[in-house]
Image (cartoon, rainbow, N blue to C red):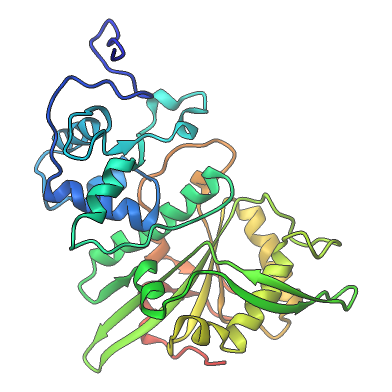
Length: 331
């Protein structure tokens, strides 16, 4: 028996409640499924922007998302989308836009479509951290779609081409004890940008690290993940060219650190400047306040592509949209 609507005729936001309507995935639906498969859970505003060429009415597009969540009479045996319950664990959740992710039926639909050969991101850790990562990469892809001179290269394409996973071992030394450790480096996400110009294409690749201040900047226990250990691992991975070996790349790689408060950003910069007194060109920093203490699903943030990213004190700021015009260092 399906849930009964409320006195206003509205269905539950938390549980699917089918009306018996038959729903077959359309081309736009498959686009949405593909973006969720590539990035992870996303708010409705992101999904609408990915398909903004396909609808004249955002209201009707939102209604379609609602059907994909509620309706169970589908060729693949159930609703295509879920609404992760973590988004409702806040006081004002009923006033927030909804966040969607793939249900098993959507994964089956993608698996049966030869136009979609995807690698679903496998991320461990808290849902909110993974959701932040999804919003970062999806925001940058959406901003690239609006620029005819930029092509976004998704993580799945990079990994498929190199025939590898995200995990790569690094050998690092604790600067306090001098003890050597072997620690796996697993970026939160990867992507690339192709910059189209009169002289041909230039490529830049990026590792994404979402920081919600849940890990210390430094720690006396080197086995505990910290931002300082992050710097040591990326120093080996980038400067020794291990990422080229790992991912079969020749273009430069930069590390994008996105944190939630200006105070945390300043602290991360200070740790970076102490570790790299002569500057570090490949560690970039920007702040996204929507992922602070009060959770609100954000709208896309094109500023991640167009606004300058900060670097260590002796390094100039860098805009990702213009990074293809810069001569970046090779290590």
